[in-house]
Image (cartoon, rainbow, N blue to C red; front, side):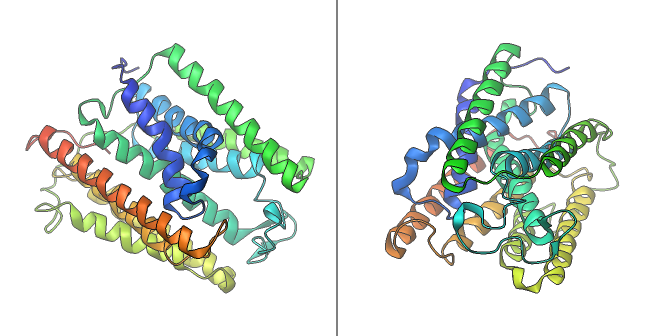
Length: 333
């Protein structure tokens, strides 16, 4: 167990950054619906804080947090919104489950995999990485004690219940008992698996991060940006080909990061660059999306505001990491 270093400011920042990344930077919601944070912050932010706190308190790093993020995906989309099983989610008539549909499970393989990408890597991963970079001195320590974690857990449950109630009022859809039980079992399996992953060890030390990675962390961000855009722009109409493309992108990203992050030259700035690349992919993709709420002009103004806010946050985090980082300081993965 790692001793907490109380940092309420970091908790509050993550509590709000997570929903802002997940829904607003992505382009699903406009500025005029910022009041939706009343429900979205407990659901997204509560989950992000719990995932980070659980992993950091156990002395774990990113593999555990990403696996917990995958568990959150199943909880959020399989049990709360149930979009993984709903053939007409929120009555949007966009047929999310049609691409690569699996009749025996009642799910769309593309939509399910797409949700795992969005929630695991962006909603949770990018948000946590950005906020940890804002507070580099405490990046690997828990920010709350047991009581604080319990309060956040309660807030998360209440936020999830509110999200379910709002969705049910609009859609009156409930998945089958078999689907709900399967989602619950899978979420538990993923949470258990998160702590079966071997704890991180020291860098392998076979030289430093290869050039140009060692001289600048931003090539890592460029890779994250390119692969992120690949995820966002893979056409669902490709069906199983789209599923294969997403799996290939995920495999390349995970393999590349797993290799590079074990090198001696990996630093917190490299981790931040990955999050920055992912955030930029989200923000730029938002400008090409059709508004789900309101008119086109209002949505584009919102896209610009949230993109600018993301740039400001990345800049601030970069300055703080550089100020804190020492040449031989520890990395964060």
